[in-house]
Image (cartoon, rainbow, N blue to C red; front, top):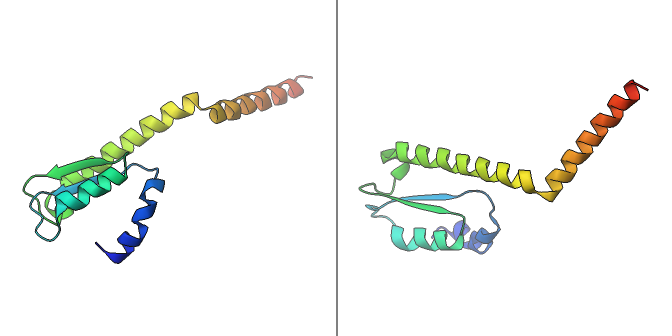
Length: 111
């Protein structure tokens, strides 16, 4: 493992953004099963995809799969954000303040 990644692995659980782990099953440089599964276990929100026939440079040999996974992660994040904003107490409070402010300025115009 790269020394910097090794130092930071204790902080993986702090990550809140979507993570997609994409590995090639033909990787001859690292043990993709051991490393990617360890990372996927440390990041419960992570998606783990294995590309058959791809090697270590999966982002070059299967760039379409990498792009597809990136777009999918962004869509899932957007969907989660929208649904959590609908029901978030903080969001409801913020919305109520905006509505109250708009109502009071509208009432002031007609007074």
